[in-house]
Image 1 (tube, rainbow, N blue to C red):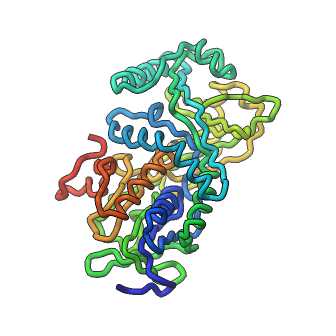
Image 2: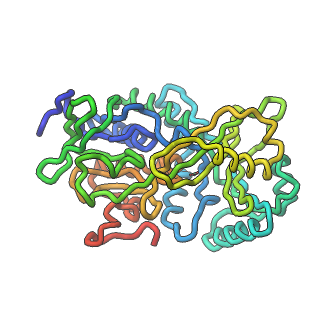
Image 3: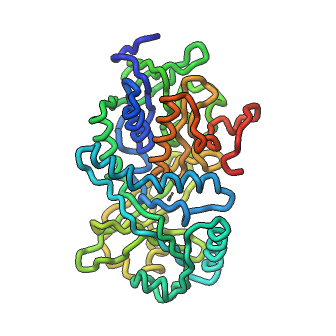
Length: 394
Ligand code: GLY
C-alpha cells in the first residue's frame, strides 16, 4: 500500500466537503472506518449554502420519478432522528429542522389544473395530500393573495436550515475524528486499474483505500478520472432571495409555500428566526453563479403576485448556487466501474433532502462492500450500456 505524502493513508477519502460529502464522512467515521478524510478548499460550502432547505419529496414529485420518491421519502422519514443525532454529535448545534408541512397553491386556472393533476398523481400513489379550495388555502396562510385559486396541503413535507445543517456537519465530523483537509483535489490517482487516492492542490498526494467522489457539479471534471466512469453532472443554476420578516409581522407564513404562478414555479420557506427564503430560478448556463437583475425581478414579481405583502420586507441577501444534475436528474450512489471509486453526487434538486439517506447508504456500502437495496436503482453504472442495471427513472 502506498503511503500518502501528507500523512497517513486514508481508509476513506471524500472529495467534496459539501452537505453530501460531510454527511457521508461523518457516518463512515461512526461506522468505524479509519482515517476518514474530506478534501475541499472550503468545507461546508457548495449548493446547500444557497439552498432553501425544503424537504418536499411529495410536493416536488415529478412524473416518472417514483424511485426517487421512494428515496426521498426514506430520507424525509429519517430527518427528525438524523437532525437530533447531529445536534448531539456536534455539541449542541441546531439544524433548524422544522416539521411545518407544505402547501402548494395555484394562481390562475391553468396553474390549478397543473396542481389538480399533481394531486391525482399523489392519490394514485397513495400519498398523503389533501386538496384545498382558495379559501381553505388562505385560512391556512392569510398572507396569500385573494386571487389564489386553491391547491394542496402535504402535512409531511418539512424544512431544515441548510447553513445550520452544514455547520453542524462540520462540527460533528471534527468531533468524530474526520480529518477536514483544506485543499482542492487536483487529480484522482489511479494505479493498476484502481482509484488509489488524490493529488491535492498543495502538491501533496493522499493515498486511500476507498475514494468517494462528492464534488457536486464538478465531480465528472476531476482530472485523472478515466473517461466513461462517471456521466456528466451538469450545473443547474438557482438564484435565491433571503428576506427578513420583522417581529411585528410574524407569523408572516407558517409553513412552506410552493406555488405555480402563471406556469412559473416558486417557493417560499419561512424559518422560525424570521428568515424567509424565496427561490428559485432554474438556469442551464454552465458554471456561472452571477446573481442577475432578471433573476431577482422574476422571483420578486411572482412572489409579489402570490403574497403581496412581501414587498414590505427587508431584502437581506441574493445568491446563486449550482445544483448538480445527472442525465436522469437522479443521484449517483455507490460503486463506479473504477474499483475503489464510489460516487455520491448528481443529487440535482434534492441534495439537502437526500443527505440522511445518502450518508446511511454510502456508509453501509463503504463498511460492508454490499450495495443496499435502496441504492440499487441509483447505481452510477446505470448509464453504461454494457453493465446490467435497474434504471432510476424507470
Ligand atoms: N429543491 C429546490 C430547488 O432545487 O430549487
